[in-house]
Image (cartoon, helix red, strand yellow):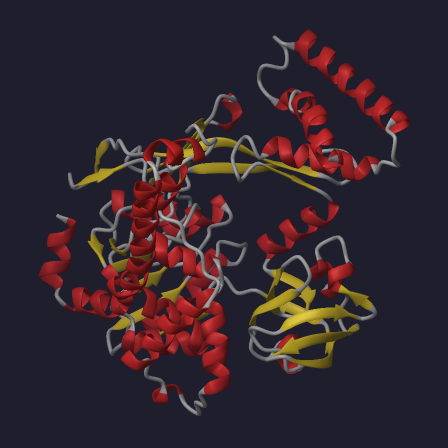
Length: 542
């Protein structure tokens, strides 16, 4: 009840405060000043007179964050801790335990420990549930418990965790962690090099350049650049990575905004490392932002063949604006347009449906690449050659988001012993075991049809239609539910790839996963075959 009062009273008024940073500031000065004064007096009176004790910082933090939710998911208020995390993410260096940890209501779950870093050395595994850090129980800690794991180099922290029902403790000694933008590169065959670019931090272009040069020294005459799962990062690094493969002075991306100073054209500034080497870029539904600038512009300039699945579709640019007391507003300032002039933004956050959800673009405009090939805007980067196993669907996304695939991989790890990567083979029996696991889990996946049926059958309509029709509705819902298990077979390729990825990391870390890819990944095998066929490669780009 208390929180609802905060939202109703504070959010509409506070929403006007941040308009100060907008270009309408001068013309609407009186209205803005008026609303700021109203909010200031309201906030003061609320804190002085509310029946219970209030927490001004918490009130303000909740009000700001709820207000910004009405814009887009990338415009965010960053408190002091958030600002530090933002800097670390872009720098690629920090002090900590060296693991991806996800925060839940009453626990922290280790998602992926990095090989030979503190969490790994302390014996933590993916799937471990951290329930206590030092003397502090996670269920009793109101803030993000992962903050308790951070600390200076060479300091230690005792962790209590649950694994397969058993409670264990370990001590982690924190150390400097380096997050590579390019975690892996290797020769696929005698003439084809493979580079994984995982994120666009400050190391992205230098590490990609270094990997390319080293692979060429090993005999690479063709390159596969893997941007799958790369969520993006620094715009400047996206341009610099693109510059590795295209000449100096080329237009890579344009940004357009209502604020004139944010309207810019970004051209390459350096000589390329190799502007002629045949290049395939891999993308999927989790390749976003800077990944789409690189893949989209290389496609527009006919410099690379794009393979995989349609990318995420984030065509918005953010910039951190400094506020008082070390806080910042990370705000969407512009849209970006690839070399051909297209914006690949998929969701329209400014035109929402009746449920308040952003509308997905369904009308696309055609553009032309330099060679005259047709490309489109509005829905991510569509590959020149699609790989079916990389396509996303609602069922697979639901199983990933609800951690069913993650939890099955944890179970698989503790039930199956593997000594070498060559021993791994995900069989049909394993997939049947996964289907059984899904059926026995609490996984809930509601289709649009189910939702519509449930909404249509209101108590009033049940009375009108009678028991027979109501029973028919129930039977239909049961049949729909049964068909979901059949859908697991329909999406077997996509699901099996995600299962294999998650399982292999448990045994052989991410490096082992990339080693596995070289001989088993559909996209890499298809890219290698395309690059081996020079005439076919050129035909795609004509």
